[in-house]
Image (cartoon, rainbow, N blue to C red; front, top):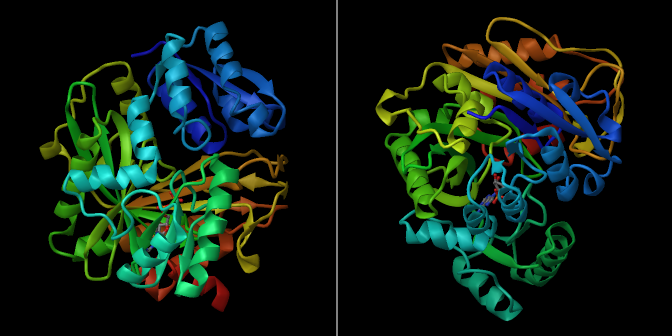
Length: 450
Ligand code: ADP
């Protein structure tokens, strides 16, 4: 294991990584921007270094500065968390060139899965079903129109370098395709510096279900079952759970998904923790959509039902240790749910609502864990993702986990900011969520109908 690790991130995930490092007896180095001097991740780390002004380009994305801090502090490895530099193959390479360890997969695996059009081809070659769509990026509008016609509308136009649902457009009829292609190209260019787009058939009434995998450097890998991430707004997850209620009631689906996930990961020589994402139709047909080559926001629900310390394993694997978990020893125990708390307004299309936080008292209780990214009486700035905390509840059964999450949310004191807390608590009590009966459009529709 390492002696000292730098955490190149902020918010709840940097805070959590610092706690896990402490639990493993590893010293931690936090980096922070001028906006985050009071942030929990700064206080939780053994050392903390300010790396620049609030905008991420000048702080959390400043690779040279982060590498310099790693050298100065004597860190041996860098944990990138999620978002920010976590899926930046150039950064992973620069870390290695500086003689440090990047806690994640190889730069080649990041690149191979980072181009989503290429990732589709890799998955397909490994025998994993993909959503019907274009073979690689589409450059010619007439060709795109012919493909869409052949697949049948609705179709999705997606940015090849996409993430966070950015640029993605659903197109219901041919007349709207050209405009959607152009706007997706523009968003891809401005957000990811890459204007390549590709087409996928839009799977009606879909669920988003994903599989967690862990691979070591010695060719050994396991899956840690699935997560249900269907409750979304703007193509971004809000409530996640494990196991998936849909997988639980669909014979053979868990086996199909988990074997496909392992095959996709093996096809790219995957190392460390990763997640293979699938769209699942109401008929139980599943299709690969992408692989996230990093830790996911929602990893705690997997930890809760398997008892596996995912961040701990990320660190041990990065240090070259063998993965000693065996598939046959892994089992699902109970049910877990995670609610993402955002400074946003569900009544106004979930628009971010930065502001000044007043009192902030996370709930405690049996089976409840809260990972926080903020402290009381602090500004929540528009510079970063508006997620301020994650609340997890685990219980022997799903109904109790949902009930625990709901009452914990109701007892969560958050003053001074508009958040989605009450909305999420209400959602957990709906008959659809209680029955596990929803698709990826359900949450937004529910918000509209309130
Ligand atoms: P991103 O990388 O931008 O997050 P994804 O490809 O992971 O994009 O898709 C994000 C979400 O968009 C999914 O969780 C799902 O709700 C929806 N989605 C993606 N592809 C499809 C599809 N082919 N059919 C229906 N919904 C889809």
